[in-house]
Amino acid sequence: MPIRPSAPPAKAEPKREMALDFHGNIMVTIHTAYAPSDADWRVYLDALRDKDLDALRSIVFTDGGAPSSKQRKELNELLGGRQVRGIVVSNSMAVRGVVTALSWFNPKIKAFAPDELRQGLRYLEISSTEEAAVWEVIEDVLSQLSTQDLRSVPKIPGR
Image (cartoon, rainbow, N blue to C red):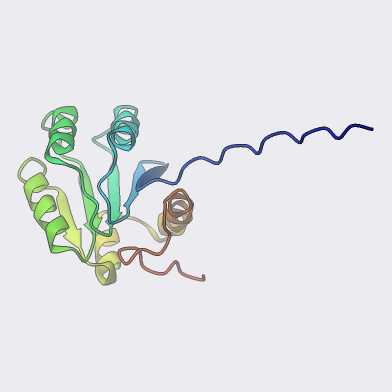
């Protein structure tokens, strides 16, 4: 009896340097140490186009990856002067500089170190119920990245 070749393995989705997901009007975005690709940035901008930006609360974790000046310009154009409340969690001074530049257009964005995350969540007015769901989103977003060992993301409670 002839041996049939097995079907080729399904292609795994390539791991990314930036990924995001939502819990209601809370967006969680995680960057590795590398800048987002233009393709990943388009996914990010498209996700924002579908949301009520006035109600959105954004949490960004990054080990140094940050949007380019072109990507920041695209974001500012999309926001059209609207201010979105958000936090950026990172140890990187370079990232804090980018947050400062973004805050010129959106004063509601603030930078926090990973050990200040609770303060950041309070700034975003995230309830304890929402916080539990946010940690689930963080875990899911981490699984989409090229690495899950990120200094900017505190240890997930209970893990």
